[in-house]
Length: 232
Image 1 (cartoon, rainbow, N blue to C red):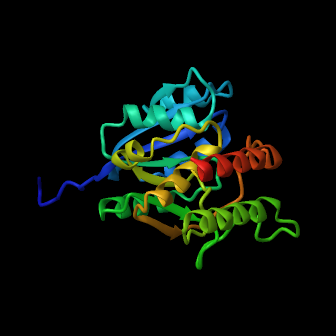
Image 2 (image 1 turned 120 degrees about the vertical axis):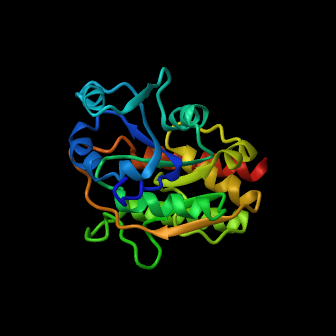
């Protein structure tokens, strides 16, 4: 082939999670290292803003959710992915596409779960420049409680930008709905003493629209999850 070597692709599946994210998707999709990843598909919660049409134009396979929620999106991805290692990514501008391959590499090194942390050394949260940091305070508080209850040392147990092995998923068998799915997978991995790796990530400003995660509503869900996981 004229001396050119074919690029070796990462052994893994990238799962793009969307629900009306057309503004972010248009800017972020071109930044994803598509040629370096074995499989890429999207799980969509029923977008009505042109997201599905954009996927079709760019030849991205899409699985539609009949049931809303991130928990259901994760379960669909685990079922449909052909690879053992999965990375979950939301193209809303917050999550840095440069870290996708780093997450895959950690999984291929043997870690059971890898989390892109917004709070460890060398990282950044999108609220760092704000006077009032409600989301950051809540995330760090829940992570601290999880560490105390389940003997962990995580810095960011909640961030959805993460990688996980199918075998890990089967062992912890998470059943949470909505945004509780990431917190629950972290907790159950801690309970089973699994190998969890964190890497620093730079969280940027959200592109277009508003987050569907409502801080106080999600907070109550996390409190319920903590109680349930502690007494199980």
